[in-house]
Image 1 (tube, rainbow, N blue to C red):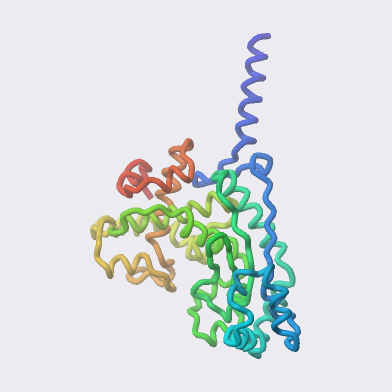
Image 2 (cartoon, one colour):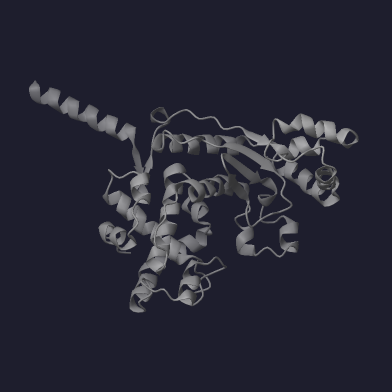
Length: 334
């Protein structure tokens, strides 16, 4: 009878442990919604409010929007220069076309609000005292270099940077095709969390050698793992499915090249650029290879470390300044 009771308690304990935290491949932890704070994100659409303005009552209508969108309308609305600039923006024919295309792609932001609500609930789980930002959208005029801005306690999303890789103006502006691939709406949550990591969670650390750069990029990608655990790896790192498969298939060969050529501890600018900069592929390797191989390896090192140390939190990870220590403690071998 005692043995049966003991067995029952063990089964219950194991079941509760599994319910509390489901481990995905790579040490990623998926936490049930019941174990996370309930968060609801509402994205305030500045572009809708602005382009609906009756320009015959321009100043008074702007004044009525100022309380709702203080960041965008922080200037003196009695200043003729400010009014002239805003009027030029709202009546610009190209921007009006861009706004209508944005409305066609994003009639609502329900999917993004749901994804960010989940991501922010993970964030509050790991950082209970973190003050979650308010989220706004706008039309930037295709400011593709910075599709998401983090300003104080605000997240600002340029929806016109996510109209799809086949949106003709992207090619007309000579945006590289490898970058256009990431200008899809499913990249919005990833870009939001990246911006938040850089401004609010990234810790100062040495950034001289390739290994330093690997580990820093790996920490950022693990932040995405922690907050967006079910998002595909290809979306997190911005690789195509084919590039991700190539990297997994050739990781040992690439690592052997890095070791043989003493690149892991290199500070050579050109060598570092080849392995860290974005592009269609990594120079010196197959044209089927992905760019930013250093980031991919750093990601695997960090994931292996976290898998080996299940007691560690993301905050513990980000506090580690010594890249060499993290590599050794991970025991990573491709």
